[in-house]
Image 1 (cartoon, rainbow, N blue to C red):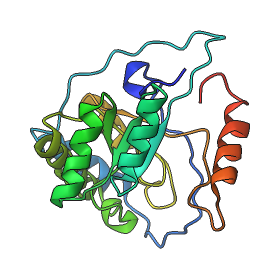
Image 2: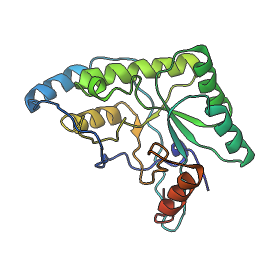
Image 3: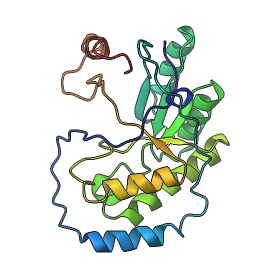
Image 4: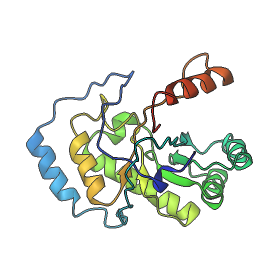
Length: 219
């Protein structure tokens, strides 16, 4: 079955996501990060949500969560139509596109019963992972945009590059803990369609998804 992640949340414990990009991030003092995180707890007063109910995965229950990152785009309407034709729901982790058409597509996602989540406003790794404050500034801005476009406050998010990557490894754990404290649930992935790879085709995307998903009860 295909469900939006928010309908059957999984654990939001960070996992090490591979990254093909390297980072020139300088060493960061852990004491300074702790101090900054304490300050952040008093900042961004609107960046909170009620915690979602976590429904444990039952052994043998095969579940596929369809997720789409980096939109909305001109492909969003086509994806929405395919989902509607197949009576399937998905989660769209969007970025900060502020033009009227993109905001309409965000609203279409919500109006058609799908889940909208955050994938960072800028999707600029060096910028959003420069510091915990930079990260929460970016995410809070995206949350406000989604609320403005859809009237719905997003409760789920996906880190750009995964919850632990070469750009955010020095701040990943405290940032993830603060997100959880504020009620948010974040998701990595265990199956990749490979659609961003050079030479990807419709057939390769389909085959990658099916072959990898078959390895799991929950994908």
